[in-house]
Image (cartoon, rainbow, N blue to C red):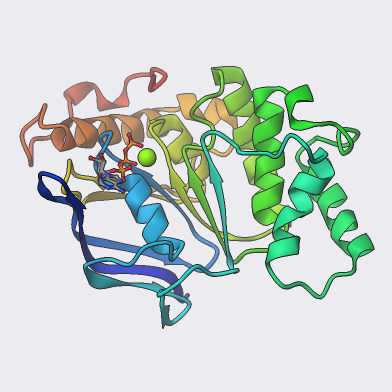
Length: 276
Ligand SMILES: Nc1ncnc2c1ncn2[C@@H]1O[C@H](COP(=O)(O)OP(=O)(O)OP(=O)(O)O)[C@@H](O)[C@H]1O
Ligand SMILES: [Mg+2]
């Protein structure tokens, strides 16, 4: 299988008033075509910076970001993004918010086809009947679903999700996890998910990358077996508990709260606690 995304020895520092702030320090991440990688790491370590580099909104100081065999130098139409706080335009209906990228990115679709695609995506995420509502008439979870449709409307090869479910309550978040599986099955994409929620990472991704504290490097990579947690009950199996214990321990190392190279706690197989 081909690497669709390859972050190759990426280093980056922001220039600030008090001098350079090194943020990424030799980052290495590869995502196979159709793969879904979750990136976790301490707050402020450089995760959103990484998403901006993949999206071509910034270029790294050194190293390369490869997308489908090309070095990313500018924003691409083949990348879709969704964020923690979906910015939907209040003066447009939900349907018109979803079709917005098609007004910006060149498309061969007619107006009617664009709307059909938006309607299809909205029904896929359970928002059938809400096409003509305004964003303020929707709940937070519904707005996030609409934002997901907008990110997918131009059939991007790559979907970047930067803590998309972070502001939602636990039940709504779990509902959206299941929606994500359904969406990925019907609308295949290569995914990069930034999250603080370790359960979310193993539920959605096939690989979890733990970044070190700032400046971030790739500290640990966990492969989630394809037989891994794909329905919510599976998050409470001993296998899931073990993965969560390993990840929690790696986060403690990244935060400087556990020594590097130390083993995870002995009770790694104990029932999982929610990560929050
Ligand atoms: N445009 C900028 N100019 C200067 N410093 C910046 C800029 N953007 C981010 N930073 C700094 O770079 C570091 C990494 O920021 P980034 O947003 O990538 O972290 P993050 O891992 O996404 O954090 P969080 O988990 O809190 O979302 C932070 O210390 C932040 O203050
Ligand atoms: Mg961030």
